[in-house]
Length: 293
Image 1: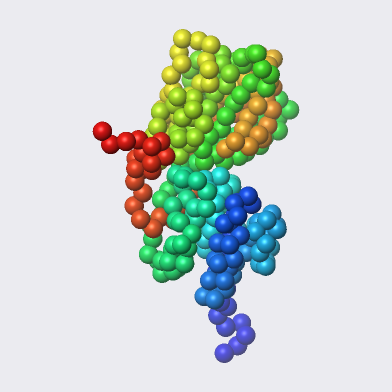
Image 2: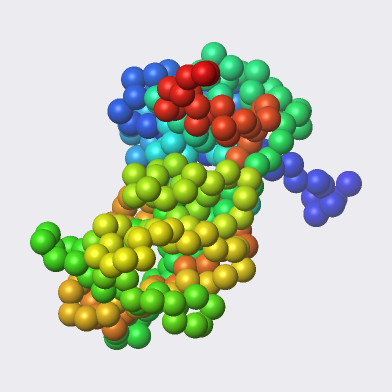
């Protein structure tokens, strides 16, 4: 056999992401690293996680992230959001190990880490797809920026005591100008996050939809809109008051009058590993302490 005909076997890589402020996270991360290495897999991590979790693993590259076998997210829902952001649309599944409070996304408890890894690499799992919103910003100077939102894109006034004017178009047709403290464009996953506090509807994450919810509107129409996954929302800043744009709670841009943002359902969903069927309504019930009556 010549050198050129030899089959090259590439070790499967697992990216580890962890919550830096959860004392259990480093313990679980070290357990995961040990198991992965003992079974022939290569754990890698970004610099921030290597430092915060105290890991002795290789620094991952963008290529490692995009081609990884799995992302192991050790934390709560915030860590799951960070994992999805890190992937930037790459079709890599995320397995959430819950070391936070009761959340909606991370389902595996730390004591089930090893059985869950065994099941994943044996192919005994399901993949749950979650809709993600592509957010495209066009500035007055012609520059463009793109982000991906698993929960929501939020548009909010930057000065207290003032409202902002946001002109909304749907599929190219003008809908209305919202005079409000701001607007949210949320996914079903985000319907139990910021959108919920704005009195938006709770939507099952199995649905594909976008929610448009005004924040403290100064107008008679104060309802949320539930739009289909093929519809496109465009938001133009109307007037001279600037508007802050945040993606999944992280501020990313300040928008001036005349600048616009387009929100549409991405064709690259987030992929979550599920070891058992998700009963969203039961998680919701536990989260809010709803009693049987």
